[in-house]
Length: 183
Image 1 (cartoon, rainbow, N blue to C red):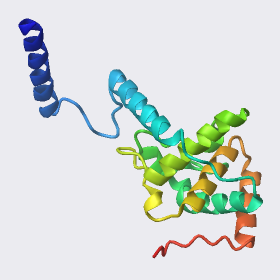
Image 2 (cartoon, helix red, strand yellow):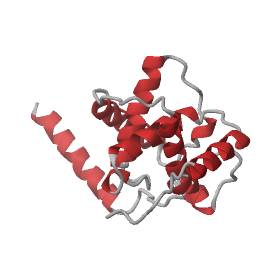
Image 3 (cartoon, rainbow, N blue to C red):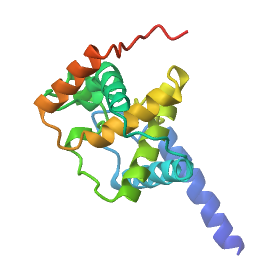
Image 4 (cartoon, rainbow, N blue to C red):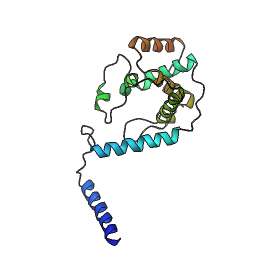
């Protein structure tokens, strides 16, 4: 038992020495080690699922909710997450990990899975994600706006550029002015 504990202690010390030496490259231009990427993904997905699974989803089927979500998404999210018809931006290209392009994600037809996805998106939009450049919009936006964005993101799957532009135009026509002077 002493030998086992000594080996663990020696391994931990060696790990700290190697990591502290700068051997692990933190540059956004270098991918994580495969095992590091898998651990980060597992921790991230587990964290989101644990915190989002019991969120109560408000009614989101109203057209006004979709328009509000579209307006907020267009104003705040397209630089990193893009939108149908938009080319990658200088910022989106330089992110690691890459921000998901939601309009390219698979649609979810199962209502229960769709609600799970909306809950997860709400939680991430509200709280942000460490070391991903995803801000915590809950510090400057109310829950209704965040639920609207989460619902919109789910509806973006395989949306055409024309559909996206029509929604943005409709949102502007319905006075969904996105104002960044949050008091």
